[in-house]
Length: 505
Ligand SMILES: Nc1ncnc2c1ncn2[C@@H]1O[C@H](COP(=O)(O)OP(=O)(O)OP(=O)(O)O)[C@@H](O)[C@H]1O
Ligand SMILES: [Mg+2]
Ligand SMILES: [Mg+2]
Image (cartoon, rainbow, N blue to C red; front, top):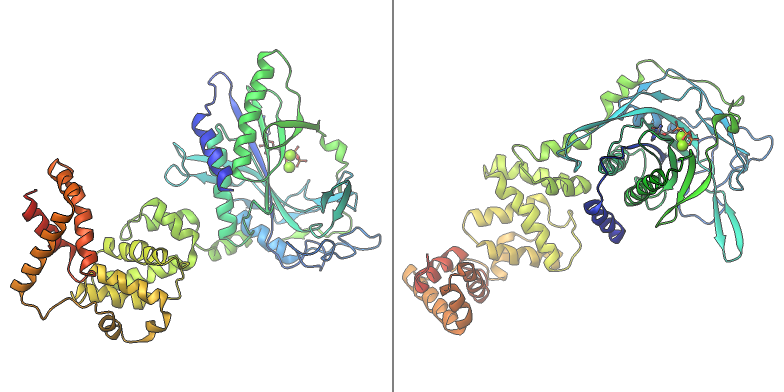
């Protein structure tokens, strides 16, 4: 996955649109809704179960079985439509789209062709958060509710069919052909993915096929070509880059671009079929499903209950008082428990202890996280609570221990969780981390001078480098001194001493 991602980034750098060939693109995004039950039956939705174990009569198209709409799916579709700023339709219906496929036993897919649940939304791409040069609005044509198909799985020389996925609820979100650039497409897919998982509408995992994208592309106003079933933002980008170049090649040869459906094989787009038109699908209203009527104000009511959207959260975290970098904010956004931890630590540290926000950020995002990494323990917000971290930070502020001692303490507590419940002072005592307060100032200064001199004598090379102008190399001498004194003496004091002894500024 990571490799695929970096490949697409590399492509992005190299790839340029040709100003003589205008790129135009619109997406159809199929999103599995995270419901307990399927769209029109009472079998449970399934992700990794043994094949054909999560199916009801209706899911396998048994004659006589009837569909009944799952209200949870309707609700999640309405939440999506609201978050995408759509006009929710108080009247919508289901239709049958006929086509034969072995993993679609009904012989048709139930979708919303004539009267979808929502129309006319938009998603705002933001130059600050979405990695594009300028803000851009992508308009949406509609959101429709539909069923997923089963899966055809090839085993050696056999083709098998797994109907667990059959009748899983989907929404298809159709954008207007507003994308003028592949970077905008990539930004949109990423944002879409983040939004639906944040709202709990969908798992958001493209790897498991929970979001699948069909990308429509045309060049210089010619017919559009639809590339079906792209499974990651990297694939969308790679397929569009390939197809853009292919269409330019055809135009340059004087060939006509015909409207067709193509697939992506990982390296090229391949023709699957000439595009069916609506007539080929023989859309008819599904006579077994009732008209869906929703309250005219439902969008407003849902809007009031929506949590803050990702952009709002990122905006807040990157502004006063937090002032996090965009990367830090993104990482926190992606780890809700860590975000909660950070916010509660930040509040106590800056409001009760009246300490600067920069130092609060440092405690959580540097000291705490690095301590876990150093002892190779997976980061766990429940281990050192915000209160416990406050206590450690407080010990440093009160000058009871040095920052380096605090680091040793943090690592010790992570590795010995039983000690977390003991009084902190006792643990500090046990580890002998207190600053050596019993020694007189003169004795301490002498000891520091001795130690620094020894280190200077033992590290001729580093000293030479410093004298040649690599002043930063002094840090490695300080590191050695800190190690020697187990962090009991502040780095600042060593820095002063080395500066003095080496005569550097
Ligand atoms: N000239 C164009 N260039 C690129 N994309 C286009 C162009 N015209 C339309 N599109 C895009 O094609 C998509 C059409 O999707 P829609 O679901 O309406 O129809 P479809 O692809 O014919 O149906 P199906 O759902 O059966 O695939 C939209 O995303 C739209 O933005
Ligand atoms: Mg479509
Ligand atoms: Mg389509």
